[in-house]
Image 1: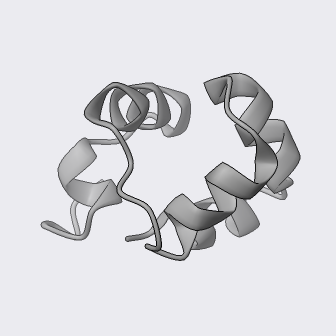
Image 2: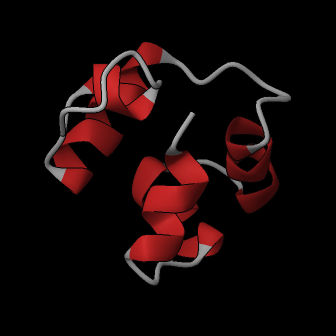
Length: 64
C-alpha cells in the first residue's frame, strides 16, 4: 500500500491521520505496515483526503 509514502510526501504525522480517521495512532501504524487490514470505509476517507482512488492507495494502479 502507498499510505506511508502519501503521508510522508504530504508532511503529515500518523497521529494527524489517525485523528481524521477516528482511530488510535498505533492502529493507523498497523494499517501502514500492513499488520492490520484497513476497513473499506477508511480507505474511502483516505482516498477523499488525498484526492485519489482506492485503487491507487492499494497499488492496483499507478494513475492517481
